[in-house]
Image 1 (cartoon, one colour):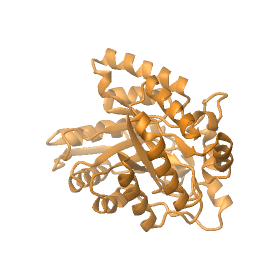
Image 2 (tube, rainbow, N blue to C red):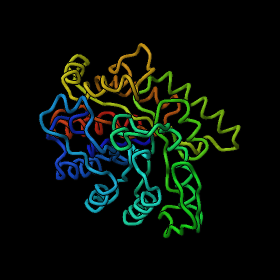
Image 3 (cartoon, rainbow, N blue to C red):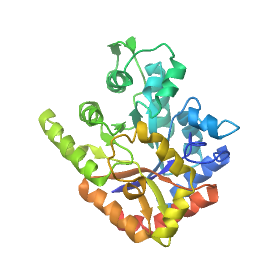
Length: 335
């Protein structure tokens, strides 16, 4: 099982306080992840400040564009991969430009790029960019996945959709990797179907192990029907992590974190339908032994990659300490 760390490209005010994500800190966190043996770092994608963040903080957060940020991260690291967790396609109006940026990064990083794609957690961001739009963001993602696959594979590609249109585009070079991994993000069952149809993995977030297990069962059944080898489709959920010497100390520290507030904010969107289980029960929070047990339970349920583990911390030194503690105490038992 691969293990990767979250990178705060667009997380100030959401999961971390303001200020937090100085460019120097973003690079430092990526370099630390490489040093500690993480497979990759995953940053998220925001274009404008969410309402609840504006209400809490007197100054706006710095949301760095992930693809541009990764150009610097790749130049300042040697082996670690970078991933978009996630790239919000409904906020990307020109799919050909996005494809060109992605391919460029893949070449300059010598194949160290992975791509997570989804609709985004906050509809209010999409409405801010397209205030008059009355469309389903999922439909945009459906078209975007098909369009990207055509652009990455066909020498000359054309696409005639409702949201994306292009004709006789020769996107070259193609990705550096023979198959650039694309993961579809989201907890809804529709995203499992999308992953089977057009992608290489399913990327849910904060899901209880029982729901993961049910999702894996559905993914394998759909893959069999579609004639795909389900072993080639990654199951790569995101979780929040906080490790403490005792469970009580881990919970106490987590509850004081900005991360805890963020999870509460997602209860009506990304984390809707998680049932009676609490964030603390679902996520990797507790002693090293407890976190190992949870991680192994996810592995048994079919998880192949703990992708973009987001460490609850209110300062960069605390975040780095958590990353190191997890790498030393937990990672050897679950990889």
